[in-house]
Image (cartoon, rainbow, N blue to C red):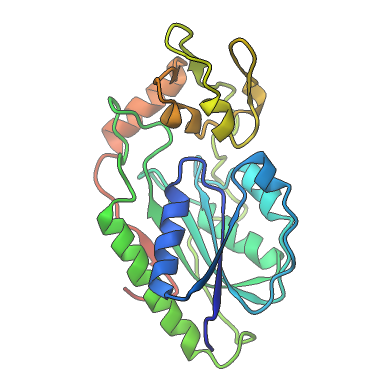
Length: 270
């Protein structure tokens, strides 16, 4: 089979998942690459035609070992007909647990045929300059592995006789899923009003429209998914985490998950 078109489908609040998918597409090396970005609320409203014979790369971050609930809701509007797919999750150097298996099962439910998968490392959403948790990743080594992965997946697809070929992609994880995705946390970043210039950056990058701007910044805690895009993109560093449980988790990750982990690849050999 020949790969003529690649579509990147992703939810990527801080850009790490998008970067990994773009690097994989670079390795596949086709001119026709289309982005379908489900990160922001307006992107979630887009109407996506059914997929057929293109190659799709689907990517999402891992939150507490699971896919974010909003990712599942947004991806569920996709429909495919045995379309070949590469499934990718990006996690913050702890564990990806059940997330990649969950993405595989979701892809199958939507009509995709996963041909390969990977769990890559990205800077943890709770990481700061002071509390390092895989800071700066994916780095140049990760990018090169993603490119090499893309080359190998293209070779595997080229060797397939037809898109209907039976593909057995073995992905680790537990079903029923045991990880809970830290979904029970009911906290959000807060705004340092003495530093904030009410520039609207935080609201513009929030994937769930949890932040509103009037004369000051307001956050609906029940909508916050703790992706920390508002913290990482604030030009004045006015968005911060103050919740003690949140800070304790970040400090634990800094102390216990600081040994470098490498991407794990499934379906091809690097």
